[in-house]
Image (cartoon, rainbow, N blue to C red):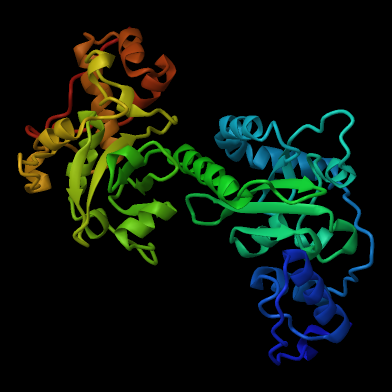
Length: 431
């Protein structure tokens, strides 16, 4: 096999094939035997993986061993990725239930390709490769087993599929896999979600399925990692909120937008290449956005690019508390229905009978005087609730849905000056 740099790049003869297997077989013949780049016969992601494997002096006829990493490294990976596992706990169960009638296996790896969750193998399963690979602690990165979908995602961060003979090693050609990335609030790869089957092609669009679940897990992870952030949920249609299609943004205590998920980047046209304020991304002052978490209804907000989106906000406290639920009004009157009527949403957003939207800032109630940071805003919420409860710590903790210890820690912080008088609030008193 010639070195990758010596591959001839002339256009191969164009032939018609009835099956994908025939195209892949020709690609392997041209690449491994003739040293010709098989452009158009396999995907570019697979071809680049083949090139990297050759550069690492791997041989396609060599056997692959699915060996677990050391016990200490496996434990370290599980501990380091506890938030990822927490974010994926429910969705992994849903995904495995959805695939229960198939022979597919679900794998979740960390950012280095070490498996941290694997579907249990049923007794009597005729899938020797998946039985060996689907174990917590096994490293399935490209450097270990050559070309595979999760290995490519670990290397490139892009979703992909690898079918049968597209695997670099001949011994893995019975596998079919589809994988998608999961990112954290820094935009870095946090993990890879993979679905694999042995002995035949997927009977459904596996890449679409795994991408949907990966997006849902990523959205949950972003929110888990957003302590002291105002998390904005928005979309062009309110029916997309609380689904994998919703856009999410995290606003920090200083009023900067710290992260955007993929849907948010597409809607706002912003990639956060540098420090970015909420005014630049949302065309609205931070005080207005801070008040969203208290109003418990959707608002129509016009972005600087002219697009109007439906938005709601959740303020997460230092202890991971979602202060959106900390209200003294009855729970039944807090949130809109899961399928709000267009007439109700239009009325709340200030849209007239003809469907014309007014100024979104005029449509929403004017925000009350508030501190300019999320820390101060959540602190004021605690103090207001405590005052309404007559200074009773236990009662205030129940109203806020937090522990008394968390309130004691918060109340030991310096008091927030009153926005109108500039005076610090009085001592809230004891339990």
